[in-house]
Length: 396
Image (cartoon, rainbow, N blue to C red):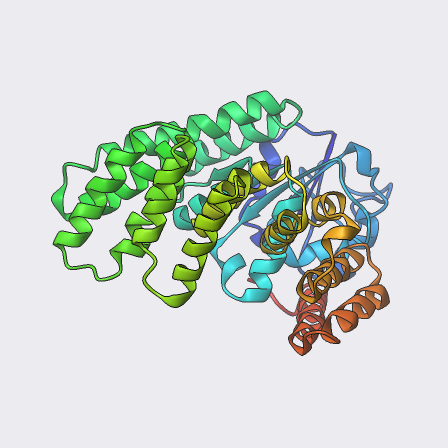
């Protein structure tokens, strides 16, 4: 197996070079800043003693995709693959990957194509655990050697989904244990209990409810005006996981303070009365940003509303291929759904290296919503920034 990493720095400044060097691989390559001018790693006279070889994106595309694992640390590179798709992809997301809407969108596209994702912000890590499987925390407070060893374990398990799932749960248990140790410290007990509830929720531990309510009580005592939404609303998702659907709807209703939330609550009640339990479960998960659980529920349901919710999830998470498989033509009756499909197709064509095709679909979406023109501007900006990296004019 060959390994190629994509970054925004020169090879000498690439922060994950130590990871590349310890991975078992036939050859290790790097595509980064100045790659257009400095790539020579595939040439016959390349220094065979080099542990990691610097190559250009053009040389990278000559690597056999079915024998290559890619490690992507700069989301901009996803637009340069042009249809070349490695056998395995690992995304390592630094905090900078989420600083703008365009970067978050690109990060989602990379993560959707990845077999494993590492995130260095725990808040972002938890958010992504609620969005997609096989997300791992690269703990910046652990020693470097321990972190690299953990990543190596995950990459070594990519061929075994069951082992990968086990490592995911292992980390949830580890994070839960750490926050349980903080519960007794009064100054941080509210946060510790809330994070504990979140990890118990992921582990489907019934004690998530007790931890959340304890955190909510502390938030109320501290005078937090928004804690009904930031804390108590999460109870509705916990109750759904426990199969207590009517209680879950009522818990959400308690937090319905503005007109939009009240409308959502009335719709949930209507669906519940009509026996549309799957839609109620999926919508409650979505209202709590648990896109991962919502996607699982919706994968087993049909109909226009289910199709619309699947599209919403696909747009928020970057799962383009899955959206096209799941959304039937009959689901695309409304203008909003049709616009969403056009946007998805625009990104799909762009990632295949077909810029004219991407522009065509973004323009079709803009015919119904002029704001869709912004995706063309995002695409132009991403390509401009990537070109700067390739020429060595920009480094993170």
